[in-house]
Image (cartoon, rainbow, N blue to C red; front, side):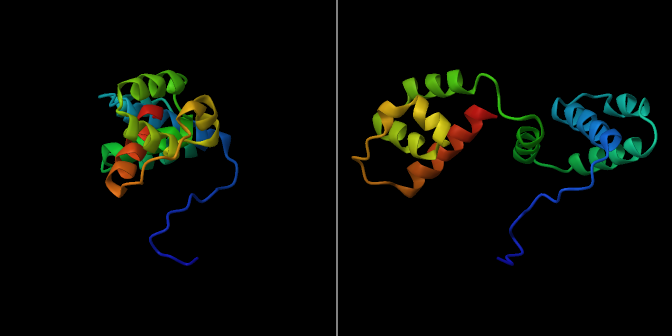
Length: 138
């Protein structure tokens, strides 16, 4: 598994000051806080340098990457199940089934009534369903 396109998250040694500073910076970037630099000026030491590096790198990230990083760092939305339920209620039956196939096992258990596999999978519908589920949970 030496695929150069595979992205892995490297775990660094535990440095609470740096981790907190980076999370503060990430929060400011994600929320597009216009004065993120002013917030970071209040940080000191190695955490301040790490936060500044993260802020500079994040300025080039796409919206999708910012959202993915937020989910990775802060977890999924607390209202994800309600958002998924609303989305499923609006979706046509074939898309509902495709969305069920893209959910996590925990989410699938909450929407067990969608478990039927009557329809042939369509790559386009599957990709669209995956995107809808991902966005509902971010």
